[in-house]
Image (cartoon, rainbow over all chains, first blue to last red; front, side, top):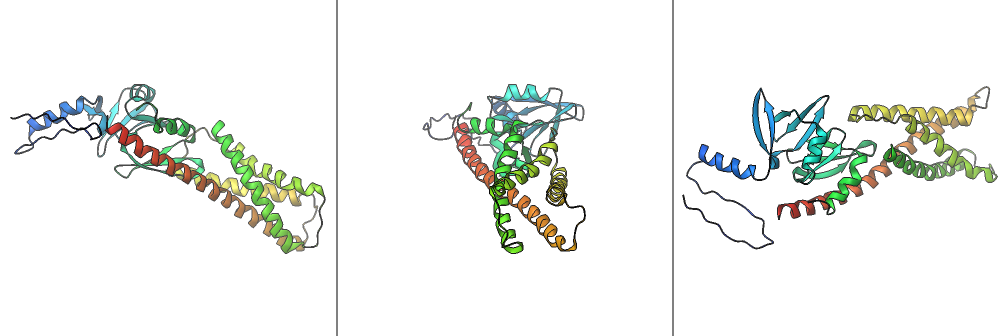
Length: 148
Length: 146
């Protein structure tokens, strides 16, 4: 397999492109490795443990005593508490938006006003999650140039 | 709680402005010849406070669902209607038949003002949301370029 590394301009977005005859297990493994370089979380689903790449996560929600990690189509459970995710992911494009949700800011397409002085953010899969008014100043600060 | 108080304060000032307007319109329609003293300036403020009280009492620490929020808003609006009518007409021992149109006009005005306060609040939030979306796009562009 030939490997090419090309330098691009500072303003251009970095990318990795794989040219292959078919997308098989070998390619999936390379993709998983690249994704793991961007950070992973552990989650369980039907008693099996999975590694979840941070860029794939839409949001993390605490329901009663449990914490769930939501992706476009899947949902995994985690033993960690929401505040632990909030602290660990604060520098990774994630932000607390309500008492029960930490969202991936890279997965929000737009923000809309909701009832009762709250806001809701529309995610890339069309789902909407509520932003509590209490967290709005912190989110605005982060979006304006806080820790990226 | 602090954010809730801030929202209530903003609603109070919007309410006072709209109550002034409602008093002007209703006064011209129902009692065009009535004259007032300086105390008339206090009434929009008093009505504004009465209108804000249920909002303070009905504060919830819980994250309410959309359905719960709508039900709460309707109860709050009806509570304000009752409080304002009780304040305005409570001193009369018997409600005369000719007072009914006035009571209905006040109730309708309170409901219109309640809805308008929310519409204005929503418009302010819409501006904030648009600015946040704009900042979000810039944030995402910056983060992707890392």
